[in-house]
Image 1 (cartoon, rainbow, N blue to C red):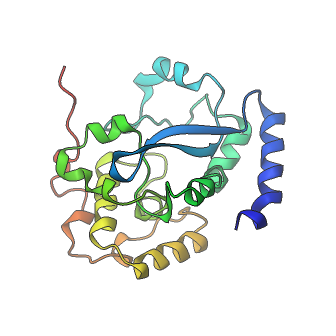
Image 2: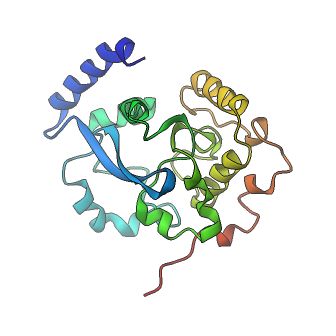
Image 3: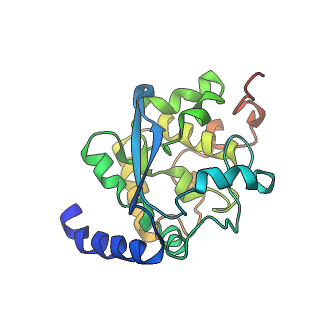
Length: 212
């Protein structure tokens, strides 16, 4: 797969360098199976000092929980917007798959700080390797305003229903929807009566604010 994608990866790398100063890749520290941290690779889509600028923008955060996201984030580069819209920024994670740190399908890889605020029984999502695609990417209600509770519940639904058949359905749907650009009903993939797919069930227990 990587051999076939090499020309595309090379072209994207050149365009990133031409668009803005900084490295081609960005390695974000994420927590994988068994609480092991690894560098989750992505094409860089933001300016190099994005983490510092986030503090200045925090009052414009549009999502709940420990995440940060805003619809018109000024830190995203021109090329970055294209890469995010097409999900091409995720392609370098194929290297993580080759290294055994990730799978093609699995829960969304998340930073240690996000997992720390999940209540303990929600951390079952760390019992499997994180994936490039999964239920969260395909089924979330709104790509810009993804709900933290919804993300946790969909990841748990994946873990509870783990099978090769489920992975096959998710991979096929990822291709057909362009990486989740058209949200699909989660009941297409797992049982509709599985309470873990309903963000409204016990959603207040999805995370706990860290004590001061």
